[in-house]
Image (cartoon, rainbow, N blue to C red; front, top):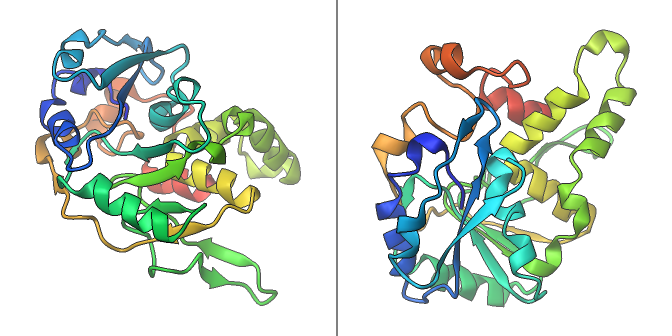
Length: 256
């Protein structure tokens, strides 16, 4: 997982819930950039979390990939193709059997991504089609409650935000007004959309679940202003707003 500078000292409950899983993870990676690209605030090095348990590793990221940092910064440390990677948010307390249950579902659907809390009906990949049969509204998985991947799903293409963004800009008329920089930022914010697009382009199946596996949201983190995604409140927008950022997560989702 990854976090923001303002949340750095508040991850004890989240990490404890991961360390105490019934199927204990082999490693827990906390991906921490050097600077938060939205405001250029420096991250502290949270060495104290490594003392909680030997399986917690602090990974420093050369680049801040925003919400994508949790996955993209740790891939280099886990090259084995069969490794299962559980991606979670930094503002939830997870049920002690989360990993065990998701691994069991993965065994029944080999070679597929498994995700908790789909946007639309469980089991479907598209919510709405146009008259030609093309998907207008794809089903997606919230990144909040747990996404289980295999390392083999990801190649260098998942790091290349620039090429798709530039190609999309070229496909629009100049009057549309979208810049490649803005599109790239939207996809960095909407990490689950970016990852699932990468999987879809490679024909990797995705299992959509409705359950959230009895996760407990930490309200003081989930609803405060220091979230990884762009500013949802006027106050945070005034202090840290980056001109490249969409005004809210819905705008980022629609663009990406």
